[in-house]
Image (tube, rainbow, N blue to C red; front, side, top):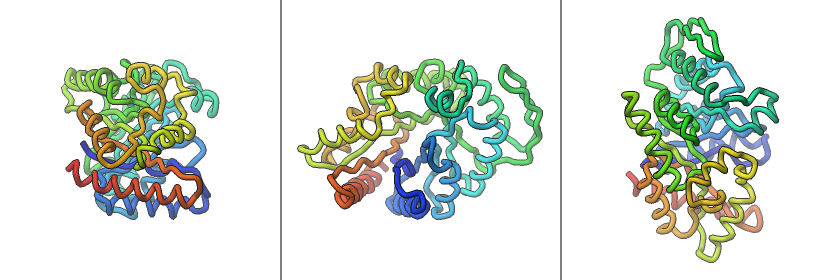
Length: 318
């Protein structure tokens, strides 16, 4: 299992964000992490722009998006942007995409959110053709009629990962992409539901075993602070409360909320939790650093302690 870190989700002074992004990705590469994942927060930096920035300050680490909402732009436009960033990154982009949630697409953007799985299937048909260029992209399906030449191509393959939670989306991800990017999925949900379905779909389609990228919060803390860490996770990472997609996924596992997903405790406890995800079929773990404390200095110190442990564990999982 490869170990990575989520970067860019934290709120803060936007004027200082670029400097912080650079600092965080330089730490991730120097710590030996395999990957870094940039979420697309609705009211924050563009995640592909973050990848381009981080690519300029690194040379080895894979840089992924988790994830780009599909409805926000045409697949040709996304392919053009992704291939450009992939080239700037020296072939280190992993493009995570997904149909997002009704409260983002419909309520925030005012776009239709009907039949997201069918829309994703049609979108991927165009996107796959475009990122396989250069050459003509000629696709006609239920949502798109595209006859578009492209001069762009990738010297190294551009992996496309699809955020997939339900059976239909997992089938799509296995058949038409290189894997899936997850959030709010515990070990049971992954081992019993996600890994078997996407792996079978990929095998039936004659594709290699898919990547399964799981995002979880992590907090190094004393045993007496574990409950506080879980409570903080529930307070600041509570997307499940507004997303039926996440609620359905939670029903397939043992976790009832994001706090239950948190790997909290000492180094041994965190390592055991990581191993449980690996045993469930996770190929890539994306760590969301979760600091605890009563003030800014305590939060920063907590984050740095957790980073040190993640760096040690990155060496251990190789």
